[in-house]
Amino acid sequence: MKKISILVLFLYIFLSGGSIAAGGMYENVDVESVTLTETTLVKVLDQDIVLKEDTQAMFYIQDGVVSDHLYTGTIAEQAVFIIQDKKLEIPADTKIWFYESGRLKYTLAISEPTTFMIQGKEVLFTAQYDMYVPMGFHENGNFRRGILAEKTSFKVQDKSIIIKGMSEFSETGQLLSGILVEEVTFLIQENQIVIPAEQMISFHRNGSVKEWVLLKNDTYFRVQNKKVLFASY
Image (cartoon, rainbow, N blue to C red; front, side):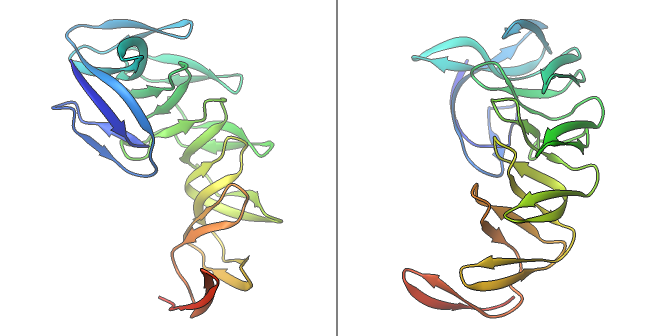
């Protein structure tokens, strides 16, 4: 067995040597790695999960002892989870992750494109993901991140903006990131900033703009009570 302290979000764990490739934000997880020599049955909340043989599974460490709370593993059989009162099917041979509570956290695939409730409406997401951008859910069951199956409008501040591609949402459904379909203007400090289409944009949880890629014009922003001129690029 191998004890690994992981500092990652949206992670995939290569199964040889326990090395880690990751992208995105960060989280602290303390787990133990176990090599499965046979098909293994584990219980997650009140359901049985069958893990694939000749793979690695990881279990949470609680009070310094390896627990039976599964962190991640590759399922040998299709598994069904209830998310937002609907059945979410995950195909066999898919790697999935769980919160310590046993609720589903990430998956690299679902059986078919599926809608999830965000900002009071059903939003359709694609079914296939990869090790750097898994589909994710918050521990309260709300949708966290995924690839939009179609262009979709979301409310940010006092306006609706159209987003496509990989998108992320807060626990309460606030849009945190996505790719703009159309040009949008936001008030940032005292500036009316035009953010072009096809740009990745992210937001703080209060709805204010966090970051974007392209600054169209040289612009002053306040930094430590001083006005600093930033160059366009």
